[in-house]
Image 1 (cartoon, one colour):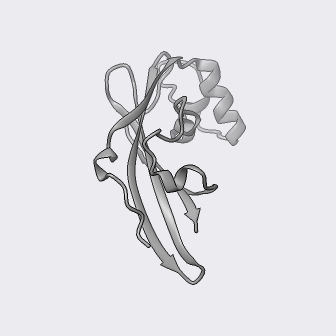
Image 2: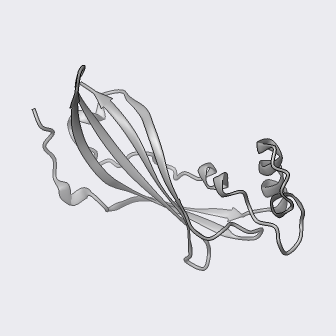
Image 3: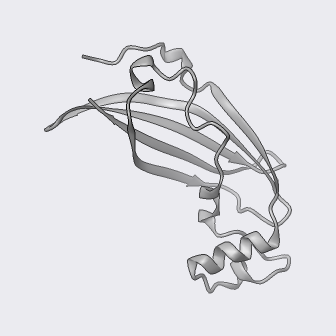
Amino acid sequence: MALEFDRSILGQEFDRVEREPVTVDEIVAFAHALGCTEPCYLEPGSGLVAHPTFVVRYRGRRFLPDSLPDPLKTRMSFDAGKDIDFGVPIRPGDRISVGAALHDVYEKTGRTGTMTFVVVRFVIRNQRGETVATIDNRLLYKD
């Protein structure tokens, strides 16, 4: 049975968070945790940028919208992966904002039955409005 819901909820932002300025220490500590050796991620100065995967640290206050289709609200989900489109690098002092919207809901049928996928899109921007990253986070709901 196909999941029925109001598709007009797709693309509507349901959460927005403004973060404190990114510090040199955060950028360098993250790079060390990854084992990076490139100076652009480790050495304070005008050339310092955050490693591209630094963006996965950012989420909003709410992970799912209240408008999620009712049949999914009471079911357990599993992380089904992420797609990340990288934009401009994060630099020390950047003020990061994270907006979240329900991007897609779709079903697939496999050997074990019907699976419903919910895609939440996080758009991460700096204080200049430049896109730092767009992350599509997929959740899997199994019937």
